[in-house]
Image (cartoon, rainbow, N blue to C red):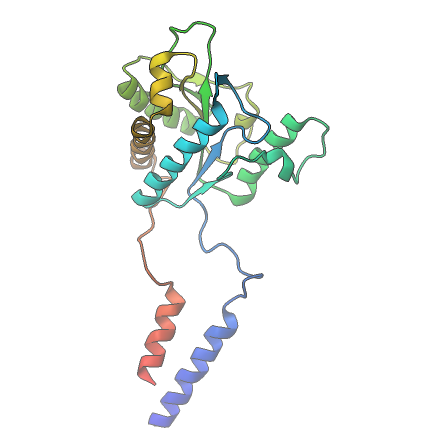
Amino acid sequence: MRNLQAIFRIAAFILILICIPTGSEALPLTPFHILIDVGHGGVDSGTSYGDLYEKDINLQIAKQLYQQLTATGYIVALNRHKDVALSDDNRWLDNRSRHIRDLAQRKNLAKEIGPQMMLSLHVNWSPSPRRRGAIILHQNTEESYLLAELLQNSLNKLTGTNEKPVKGKMYYMLRHNYCPSVIVEMGFISNAHDREMLTNPKAQEKIAQAITEAVSEYVKLSGNLKTEARVKESWWRKLMSSLLDKL
């Protein structure tokens, strides 16, 4: 009987190994909760002030936001993690316009990976140096508006402003129904106060924290996302280990 049990365990162990896909065949273990769209990049610097470029600020804060959201327990993806133009990697739209190829790459990547939320990070500019504060642009959906309202309130508290979210119906990145999406204009690079906040690492961390808090509040109110419990080993490694221990 003992030999029969050992044979059964070995057979189960082999079956597990056979069923585990190889690296080339593996599918994502779980869908992404949040996609952070890092605005601009590469040859597209976005708006600027002297030698300060929007593309760099977007990436710096996006990395802070990624760390905070991940630490909270969400599964997060960045669509760029360095200074590159996404138009160079476009796979969906053959168009002569680099700008349109860039937007197509961003929008269709969201469709492909299927996040439950997309946050598009940007920096604003105004001809008036007095214009300041974050502005959130949203889709024409209840979910997107709720997310925008919570983000706007959270960032208003941080910046001491009283802005209202704006329906961004003309923006390419918001013209889809893949998931609730917003454009987060984090501040005006043309304003001295905002510029200091956008470029100071400690202040960048506070911006990321304000966004993270708003996302968590949205999750509580909508129930759309579930945080993942952290584990050091995947389920199949634990199972194989327990089988081996019993042999």
